[in-house]
Length: 226
Image (spheres, rainbow, N blue to C red):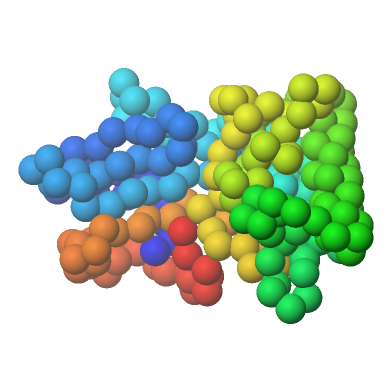
């Protein structure tokens, strides 16, 4: 459910006696009814939440987005939501018959033939290039968030001692959306999502918010929800 007016929604939450808490790491508001979680409100990077006043205010933020699947990656820098730089990487790193990335294959089989070594070399360069480009953005621009979509099983290959991208960076933010095939258009779609106020009810609590839905003018929902 897209929320067009967050202040109006929070006023409705207060009227209903719904409790809330703010999750700093995930930048979302969690909603409770009698200590039971009933939903989450994902906030855009352009809004900040004041937990003392339970209020919202606008902020100017810049961010990086990087999306990685086996052999394909898309990344870019966004200044206040506007993409100013982007890059797409592709690498020959998937075994055709098995459809498994060479890195995962070697972890299970523990050996490599000539073709496998070629794919492994391409895989290592693939992640090194991504780290180098993201590090370039981090060194060049003021970055408030680093939004990513990448399996944590691949993190050992992504982060390096030399680069500015570190796995314990507090700015890292997991993109709440499944990415099938990274590309420039998907990068822009993720950026739109990260600038949307989205209410995600817990299972069995969809009807709980029907009163507010009736009062709210809705916009069409994206195919991929949060």
